[in-house]
Structures are given as C-alpha cells and as structure tokens.
Image (cartoon, rainbow, N blue to C red; front, side, top):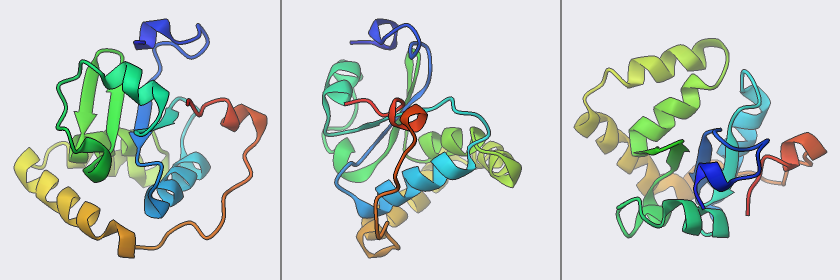
Length: 143
C-alpha cells in the first residue's frame, strides 16, 4: 500500500509513524493533536499493518520501530530529527518556526540529540490516560 492506495480522502497526506507501544510517543501524538495548525497529519503505529505496507520498500534501518519516528510524505521518508522537524512544521505558533530552524542544524548533530531522547524516552513523562478522540480525529489513525 502506498499513499496513492489509501482511501481517496486520506491519500497524499503525510503519515506520522510512531512507536505504538511507547507511552511517551503516545503522549506526544496527543500533544500534536491538541496543537496542530490544521488536521493534515495521519497517524499509524510502526507495529501496524499500514507501516508494514507503506514502509516495506523504504530501505529503513531494521530497528526503526524501536528508535525513531518516521514521516512518510508522498514518496519521501523522513526519520529521526528530520521527521520531528516535519511534525513541528505542521504545528501552530512557535513550533512551526522551531521545526524550520531544526532543519538548519546539521543532521548528524540533530540526530545525536534525537537518539539521546529516544534512548531515555521510557523515563520521560508519558500519557497517564488515553485521550478520548472525536470521530474526526479517530478517522486519522490508520491500522
């Protein structure tokens, strides 16, 4: 399945793949949903069917589900700090500016910071409860 094979109303929208088994990652998704500028992003766990289908031929590191987020934007896959920057660019307020500035940081440096956060994410604040999503938001989550 590629973005072109998604239902018509969902096609050609960026997909944020995240670790569905990580409380910090789930809390981050809830934060994005509350602060995004417009409801553009779709969401799918890296452990799910959509990730399996969309990312199958992406040539990503084998341990990507354990250590990174991935943004699939039509035909391009962004991982680690570049994926985080893209998500920030979809958010409102100063987050969008921060995302744009993050793309100016050399990738090795930005990814080193990303890897440090990823390594300790199990010790970072996590969602204490699942947010009840409206039907519109729930429809943006892919299997």
